[in-house]
Image (cartoon, rainbow, N blue to C red; front, side, top):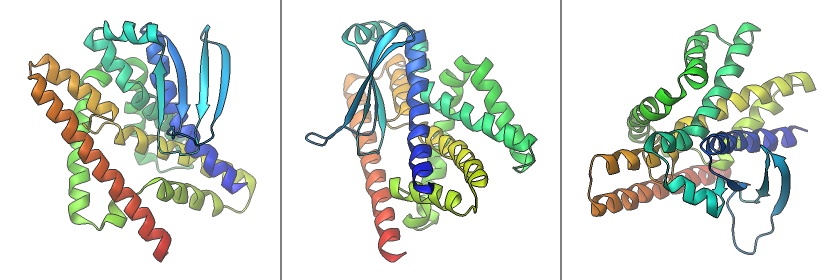
Length: 267
């Protein structure tokens, strides 16, 4: 049961993120062809479901066994529509997943705080995050999230310098182990379910925050690219940004897998 809850929480956090993108794409008139959980790898089996009449359209849901990410794929018509959207609409789409994750964390934290299941000191940031997500989404997406990405970049650099890699980063195995540890530590079903909901909020916060990083392959990086284009940077400079930030992301992924490997081998 604990293993199933762990996998469900992990997949649900990613699904919420992609749902946020899909919801915003639908609002901006971008037709969606496919929502995928996991990274597609050639020749590896996957599960594909056709969901009809979701928001009035047909969408393919795809589940891949390599649970290292997720994606929303527009249709050919949707891609053409997205190319013609103003920057504001694109910022909203790129930030849609982050907003969904922050809203999930905010609501769970507020409910747990009101029920006395969580430290009330977290209520203030949770309420602020929830208000921003529900009523000031444009301000959050266009201005606040890029700034948060820069702040979080500084925190990531500091943690990598100040702490061992095994303590500063974690890959999928580390995240799953963290979720499972919280759930398995409970003796009965109700506390396990409560721990699962708590971890859903926590992992949503981590996933949303991570995606604010100004790296091209992440949501925050796409918003940064929009700003660089708006500020008149040359094509060559944009290519260097995309190439360089993607390289940094690959290095972080390698560090995360190294951290997981060390923990699995020695612990």
